[in-house]
Length: 381
Image (cartoon, rainbow, N blue to C red; front, side, top):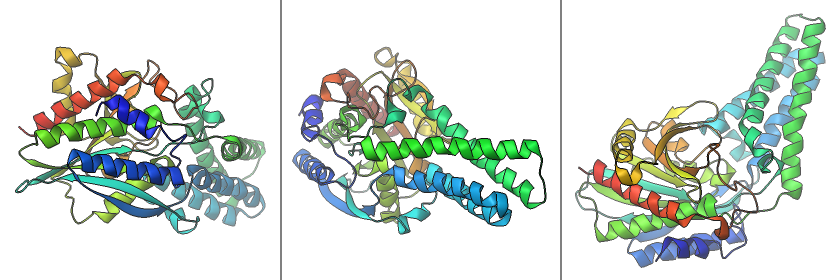
């Protein structure tokens, strides 16, 4: 089936919002496509909260409260502020998610298709998330260019606030300390307002590029590898749910299969937002801490990028948001992502109502499928 047909098939629903009924139906559609291709396919269930907004509202709201409390009771302010920073770091690196046990859980699922290979000593796991996000002011075309800078300033303000409260605890004072305290807690109101606005007024988007294109590309690769399987790899194809809820689906997958995947012999190739711009292979990623991609996979991509048909494919360090590859990379696995980025290194139509099939460059998805297949060939040598 052509990539275009599969993208349109996933976009038959107005959205595939995380944990929604539409996400469930999309998962069942993907499972059916995997079976038709010839994979052993199944749904793997997990529980998630519904939106990343709730996590960061708790983090920013808790930091704001720490600032208010801490000026009078600095000890408790320091404790609460440090706790919120720890949660913030854990969420942004995917290393821990303590709020999973606090926020209400809702059912979601990953879709796993396996191309078995008797005697294969290595695994190659293709991944692509199939859920779609909500829009919000942060993703407005006029504002999205400042998304990362706003995030970094918010992180800095949390650190400044903690340092201010520590100085206050040890008896410090003065105009400068008061000014830093006021500026830091005042700035934290901005992300709080934006997140509340997103939940109240944001709408789920169709998600054609982000990330029906990635799923369709993965299924195209699966179809080709079923017909011509690699010699040394057993290949898994993973469509993750709740990626838009801070990579919950991939984290659930790695946890569920921790005894089946080995850091030395398992490779993750993630496909995300392949509906516009130019093709990039991600050599490192992370919003706070940067995790390098697999040197072996980067070398394979570097080699291919020298060929005429891929001369416009280039390396990129992605720091705008978290991709599913961040989860295995942060846990020591070999991982790399392929994605499409525009001239400003942004994702076209990112989390915006214009992310529909009419605005997808299907040729980019086709090129990404071919590039991914060639990476498999190089790794399989």
